[in-house]
Amino acid sequence: MRTEVRGTLAELAPIWDAFVDASPSPSPFLCSWWLEAVAVGTPTFVLAFHGDELLGGAPFVEERRRGVRRYRLATAGSEHGLDLVAAPGRGDAVAVAVGAWLQRAGNRIVDLSGLRPDSALASCAPRATRVEMLETAPWFDVPPTFEDYLASRRKKFRQEIRRVGRRFDSSATVTGSIRGPGPSVPAIAVARSCRTVPMISPVLESFIDENRLGSTV
Image (cartoon, rainbow, N blue to C red; front, side, top):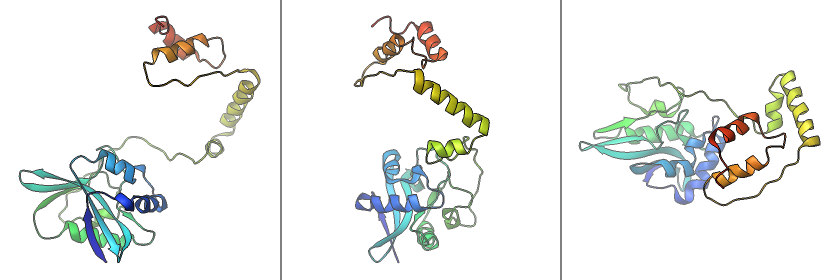
């Protein structure tokens, strides 16, 4: 097994993303398109290979603080539930490779903020590492389909959703148009013109009235 450091995933991006999707806790914050979009500093992908086969790796950015290299996860700063990325069954091997790279000779600062408490990447840190528990925003896993979501709710809630759906199907007439980029006022004016349609909520109608939107169009 060999370790390679790259500034971009390039042609390896599809393989990397497949590893993310196959992981026990897939996170969009580990996908190649996210990592390369939010990286501030020098992107540093530490990758483990078996021959020419990618096994996985860890996404960092490198910065300089008073002459000392600082590595942190390539995130926008608010992500959580992160870990290294590895092919199924190869997480331990990738952790060994990344850990050896992080603990190589020399001075550096390593910031692993955003890791899951049980992450494999956490095991790569030296024993003297300072660990702090960070608060995260509330979140929940989104079911793959709306029907799956309904099945997870109470019976009364499901009945109410279906009742409203049937009423909508029998009485509502929906019209619309596609508009290009531009001010939101013209689009809101369209909503104002549809005020007699039952689907326009009282909250939206009140907002339009209070702000007198659409009257200038």
